[in-house]
Amino acid sequence: MARRQPSWLAAIGRWAGCGLGLVLIGLVKLYQFTLSPLLGPRCRFWPSCSHYTAEAIRVHGPLRGGWLGARRIVRCHPGNHGGIDPVPGGPSEALCREDPELDEHFGCQRTECGDKRPLL
Image (cartoon, rainbow, N blue to C red):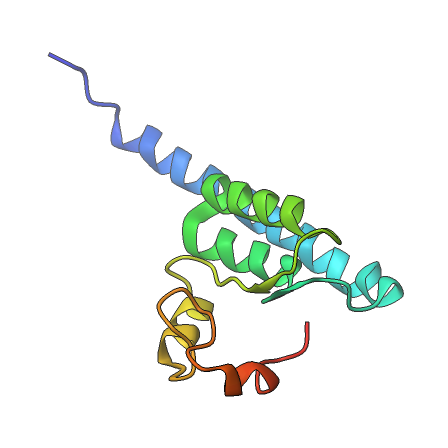
């Protein structure tokens, strides 16, 4: 029979995860307010990679959210066309699901909506 870990140990784990999440979000905010204005808008996606990473950490926690953010940053390069890429299960995905001009994969349903999408 497997031993259950004590509740105090689980509480410590939750607090450590919360603290790590706050540190990671703090680093993203530091980037957004210091380095990002100097570089200008370069992200090929909506939401931007830094906003995506912060939202992913808030929604999924520091480990999975950090992994999703790192994957997104690696994909943001001149060879990728970019586009709309919301955080799975996050507020940005909910916004995209409410938009009648986007299909289930967050692409345009009609060719007319191409000029109505935000510039990336």
